[in-house]
Amino acid sequence: MEVVVVDDRETPLSGVAVELAQGAADEALRTRTDEHGVALFEGLEEGRYRFRLLDVEPALWRVLGRLPLPPRAAGAAPRWGSVSRPKPLSWTCEGTESLAVLAAKLGVRPSRLIDASTGQPLTPEVAPAPGTRVEVLPFAHEWTTVETGFRHVVHRIGLPLSLVVVLRDGTHHPRAHQPYLLKVWLDDEEELPAREGMTDAEGRMAQVLPARAARGEVTVSPGRDDERKVTLRFAALRATSAPEGLQERLENLGFSCGGERGQFGPKTRLAVEWFQYALGLPPSGEADEATCAALGLLHRS
Image 1 (tube, rainbow, N blue to C red):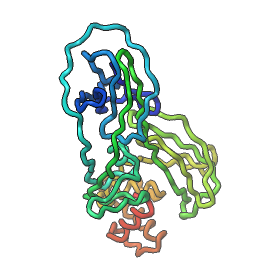
Image 2 (cartoon, helix red, strand yellow; image 1 turned 180 degrees about the horizontal axis):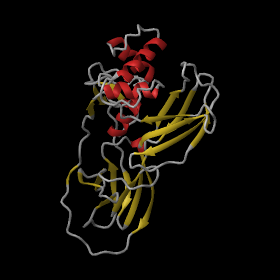
Image 3 (cartoon, one colour; image 1 turned 60 degrees about the vertical axis):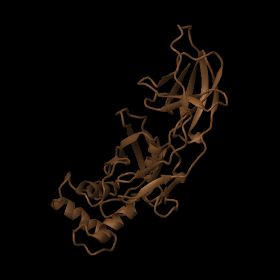
Image 4 (cartoon, rainbow, N blue to C red; image 1 turned 30 degrees about the horizontal axis):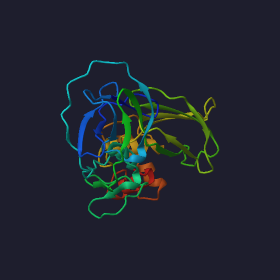
């Protein structure tokens, strides 16, 4: 028997934990999918079994169908172990992860994430602070019936990411009702089809991205004299206390740091001053606590 796990684009997923059990017995086999997304179970007696994806919320996977396997020589009888028990899932935040990315890492929906210290749900619009211990609300692992002699194809559903960007001109006024072109690259550098849209009255563009989106490029007013391109990085921001994290957020909000990266240079200082001026903060050019807090709140990460 084979279990093949694929993502939203039917690309095989490696390293996914799969568990197979016999009827109602408390014995199971466990393995992980290989580089082709295949979990192979050999030496089984003919018949029906139960299987599930471990540590993945049931709402995020489903069986697409099955294909008959060609006859093959019987392998050695498998060594059965006990059925695994649910274990608490948790994560210590580094300050670079959005809730959507954390949920994708932990195999659950964002609504199941809580602050371990308070037991309270986390706010979707605000990235957890560095050092925050995030836990997953317990969920029941559901089983699905499968049969020997077949390759069963399973869809591991991805969690989409929401992208909201407010576009402004050189005087920090919203670029309202402007056409834009959005290009998106996945984490394997594959480029998705470009998306066209129009900003709203506040200069806002909103898109839903696949969970594997890594970076993007927005061209505002393409082909016109006031055309402008903005480079975006998704779910990979460093903390605002780091120069790179400060610069990435400023750039995303339209305050150019002049290409400076990793060092707090004069162009970054000028970008901070403009940001402070736009928000009514004292334009000191220093990335003080109030400025970093305002930057994180406005950027929503």
